[in-house]
Length: 413
Image (cartoon, rainbow, N blue to C red; front, top):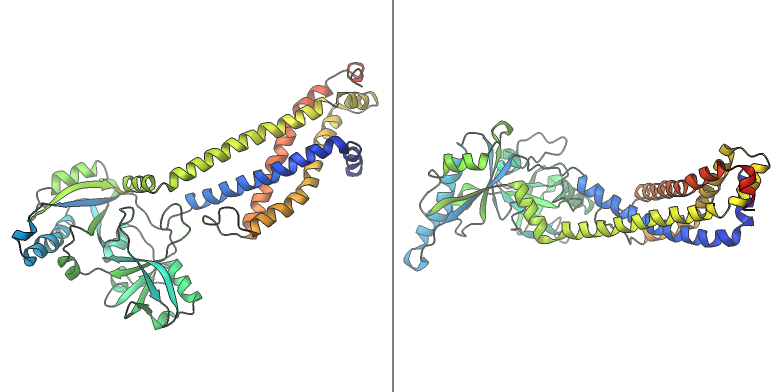
């Protein structure tokens, strides 16, 4: 059967040559589109490793005062110690499960601090995000300890201990670091108190190299920045019904402390939406996906149209086969099998081209690692999509021809 189909393809090599060139070009373009969509989709829908459901940012404001009219002691009292009082009062609010505090560390707020950390005297890990937080921060955002960790967040962050994210810990080990030796942070040698399970910084990144360090009450009390210290709370799901309105009604007066006052209660889902809108990553990806979808639709129409037209042109040949005794079912089978075999032959040079593009890392590597599994999955999906297009392009006109009477079909011959 295959030998017979190869002979048919060879006998029509002039016509099939142009079709083969089209299939090869379309196959490579379609593979690029599918590989890119697969990479973006995998990272976007992958588990985050932390959770913002039922989490709110408690935004605090401070009354303006002429700084020339107050001394530094007054500033510290109103900016730092008032915040400590506010944190204690927020913990008493009904429905609040956990309260977390961070200094330039709250996700999706736009404040970040990056440092280099040392594995040894001569080996550094660059661009590590420093998270100065209270242990409650880890609970609010639902971070999980790495498997095997037995200590609580409080114990992991006590004293001179730090917590490494799963990805940072892997980088640390790859550069020759050993957990029992600790990690350099500036001039300090910090003890590695714990490691989190792997998580991602946001929905458009694969991982996160974060270092968590304890934010003490003394540091909060001394803060005079109006305000890099920020508060987030996790709410019990059963109490998360119109929580912002409830919190304002319940806590507004209690949080009016010196110059400090409650400004707003914002769901973290809104903060994430605003941040993704500001940095433009989501919009850029949506535009890319729209372009890819448009190309995919045109490829779909083009391939179906090409094989539809090709099949229509062969009515005489099909009529002759019917006249010589071919059944209607076998006639459709031959036409479809010939198209799929032609695709399979073209897939061989397409495989070489696509693999070279994969090795050259010309597709979206920031969203998904270049692996053989990724390439194989993308190539197989491309082949199946192309096969479906070809079958659709051949199936209906072949079905119509198979219904012709032999005498009518022979007229085309």
